[in-house]
Image 1: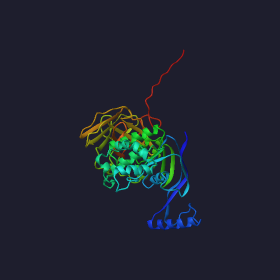
Image 2: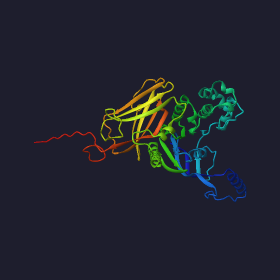
Image 3: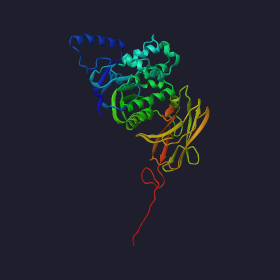
Image 4: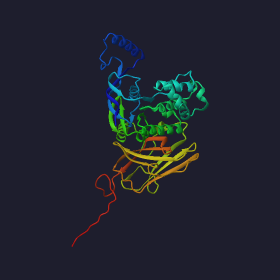
Length: 416
């Protein structure tokens, strides 16, 4: 397949001061007109590299995830790919039409109606009026904003901006679709529809670049991933490996300030994971021995029971549950009801418990950090997440030589 994105040692610098940035910008314009521009690699006082020395290639039909902590340069890189920012050093080569959803409300005029902005935004994305006319009803149907189509978009909520913006972007027949975290402000049904649409346009040959903090979304929607930290690439490769690297670094950052005792919910993580307006919430996770006793740890190979308590605030169709064990190297074991073909009935408002039973917990001896995800549907849309909120110790099994003891059968045959 042909290469559609080629990034070679790309970098972008900014100034920490708006006033200083405007001053530098004016100087650069004057110096550039006189052929006296500064070397782009040189940082002037107050400047920093928002993106530094990034290189990768993407082929037609591939999906790339970009992950990293806040301030790592993810959105800046996406804007460079979209042509909003030009690199200060290195190069970016794009082949094909780009459709981007990078910022809520980007490409819309606040005083124009949604109907009028479809034409404005479509033109920005390179569509001719005849193309927009032909696809207009499909855009409207996908956005599903009802009577607000003929209202000025300045009255729109963030979710309505996302609906209309994404609808126009995916119906512009892009060769490359760039999507930032903006889908997080949309409602559950629309987000699922967006991810399904991304999958559809990929089958038609489009390349997708997706920025998200949600490791679950990156794992499910992309094959390769770029991990950024402080503007610099840390690693580039298969998404599962990059997520493990990202999580490993996050665990190292949190290790010094982890207050929770083994088997207990970390108040800090619990507060960070909670969110108002959820349709389903995690209440507690009990890590137990096979007989149901809550424990802080078990010997490798012992029977294990996890009891996850949750609250349903609104009806949830096709719920799924995931309990994941990490050590300092990354993800070690993931139990996911959807992946394992377990289908639960719809849940009505109230509280409930789901149990995961393992006849043998054959994990190597180590201290594990446990994360929980609960969500809905075949698309595995997360409704609540607790990252590394519990710790659990797996000890050495009795009579084991090595880190774990596996079930074994011996058979001896002797010839006379």
